[in-house]
Image 1 (tube, rainbow, N blue to C red):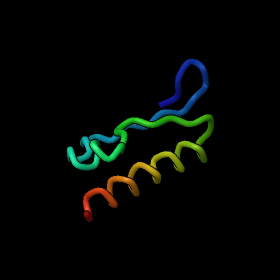
Image 2: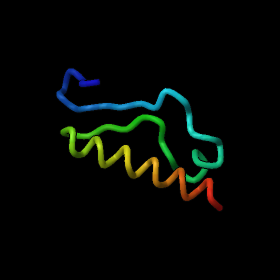
Image 3: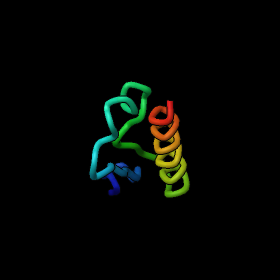
Image 4: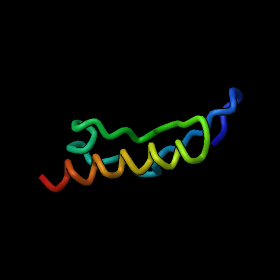
Length: 54
């Protein structure tokens, strides 16, 4: 999605498991451009993966 202010937003269709959310993984992220948005998505997915593997 793109906001009225021009920022890009993305939200997962399915929430992260509670363990991932407790570790700080956010379902919805934003960025100034598509590159930043993709980076934010990758960071959250990575954080969730690490949390779930412990």
